[in-house]
Amino acid sequence: MRTSIKLVLTSVVVAFLAVQWTTPRLNAESLKGARVLVTGASTGIGEQIAYHYARSNAQIVITARREHVLQQVAEKCLSLGAQKAVYIAADMANETDPDEVVNFALDKLGGLDYLVLNHIGSSPFSMWDGDLEHTRWLMKVNFFSYIQMAWKALTSLEESKGSLVVVSSLLGKMPSPFVAPYTSTKFALNGFFGALQHELAMKKSNVSISIVTLGLIDTESAMDKVRGITSVPAYPAEEAALNIIVAGATRQSEAFYPWFTHIAAATREWFPSITNYFVRTSYSYTP
Ligand SMILES: NC(=O)c1ccc[n+]([C@@H]2O[C@H](COP(=O)([O-])OP(=O)(O)OC[C@H]3O[C@@H](n4cnc5c(N)ncnc54)[C@H](OP(=O)(O)O)[C@@H]3O)[C@@H](O)[C@H]2O)c1
Image 1 (cartoon, protein in one colour):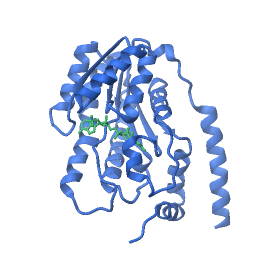
Image 2 (cartoon, rainbow, N blue to C red):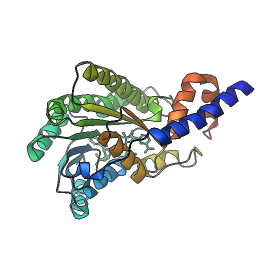
Image 3 (tube, rainbow, N blue to C red):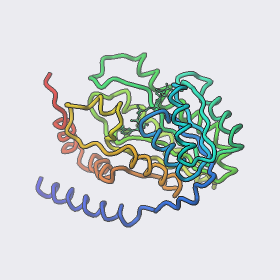
Image 4 (cartoon, rainbow, N blue to C red):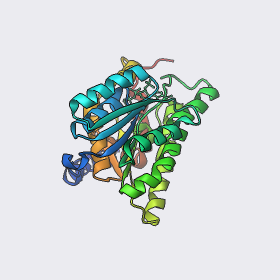
């Protein structure tokens, strides 16, 4: 047990230093005029992603379901410096909407340099109750629409030497209680886009895929779920958004924010029993 703890601590320090030394820095100039499509951009991390691109004078298409909110976000993007900011309302549970959104972006921007897949459907924070219908729906929104949009945008990204950015979660590497359907969608994303990374590299494709693993972030929807249930610290959405953009712009295949999510994911692989113990005891739950 003692050796395990020493090993964990040493790994934490080594990984922290490795992350500090090897994380590429963003050249904001490179984003000037970039043609970007951001999903789930009406609120939360997606909204912050749109604002960062806007400050770098990018051309942006944003999407989510609520048109009136998208309109406000697009207006703010223009006031922050976006060269262009347009929106399209779409429901990613609908079979045709993912294609329509990509077509809209290609039409408005004349191509794509970045596709940032970030949206998620709402799901309860509770023990699995056998609701298959909800899980099927969530798979459509959080997984199938991602692969549909990625496929539709691939030709344009190939032409522009572009980047596909997939926003994932620590819960896509480390199963956690109360979120079985959500965790499943994130594991599916990691598996699919991990395989696609190999295939694109083997085909010598121009397109980079960045899979970004996030820990707990202080968005309203996340905080509403975990308030009073966990003591895990939440990190700012604005900083998470910046890390996502940097991952895409610097073509990192994997990125982690905050940095210790990298350690948490590795620790789960190396020491599953200890990690499971910490996961289960990090929640206030009485049966
Ligand atoms: N916050 C965290 O703690 C955390 C941790 C790890 C990973 N992440 C990941 O970070 C990303 C963003 O999370 P967030 O906390 O910012 O989420 P959020 O605040 O709940 O925002 C979700 C976005 O998706 C849109 N959306 C919801 N249902 C949709 C549907 N059926 N079709 C199209 N768009 C839909 C929402 O807008 P409308 O309601 O207008 O449609 C909203 O813009 C997600 O991929 C999430 O898994 C977050």
